[in-house]
Amino acid sequence: MWSRLNSESEGRRRAAELASTDDFFKPAIAEGAVMAHHMQGTVESARTAVRQILKNHPIYLSTYEEIVDQHKSINETGMGRTGDEKLAQLELKLKAQFEAAEQAKEQLRQLQETMEEEKRNHARQCQLLQEQFADVERKREQAIHEAEERSRREIQAAEAKWRQEVEAKRRRAKKNADPEERMKNMTITPNPHSPSVRHGVIVSGRSYAMFNQEHDSYYATLDHNKEDAKARPSIAHYGEFNQ
Image (cartoon, rainbow, N blue to C red; front, side):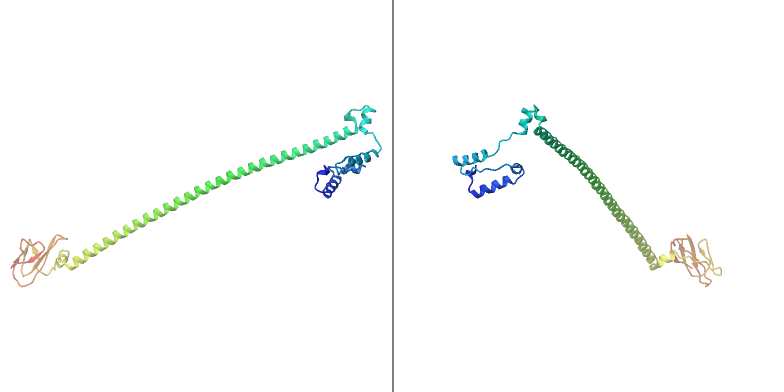
């Protein structure tokens, strides 16, 4: 393996990493183990490593003594007990990790439920706002329509009133401008000291008689010249009486 490295410095760097890492050789070196480097990949390099091993004193593994001499099962040996302890620790660790994962899963589920509920609430609020906006818009359009209709009716009423007033003024102006119309609607109170008209005959004098259409009656003014006159039968509005 060492012969495949690019340089000796790289091999020494890797050896130092193995010797100083807990996951590699550090615990064994701490208990007295020695690292031997088979650098060149030759027979002599291998012999050097073997000779270094032969210098060590042989010892029996405690597990071997417990199994052979003490007739213990593997689980009863120190190695077995250590393995059981490690397995128990690993089991506890895995159990804790599993419980943490289950707790995280439950938290995630609750979070998802909360988010879904918030999403539904948001959708309901949006729907409510849309309905309120539509209702406000409908009321606004209705108010505009009612205001326009009311304004139209008011304009029509004002226009009709204005036309009536104009027509009334026109009629009054026409009546005031036409002497015949003024005479038709004129009420004349007979003078008790003047001759009167009886059965269409004027007692005396030269006069003009008028027929008031509004009051359906004749009235006359007479001159006191002691002359008799008779009203014409064809007088409809006003006319001259003959002597």
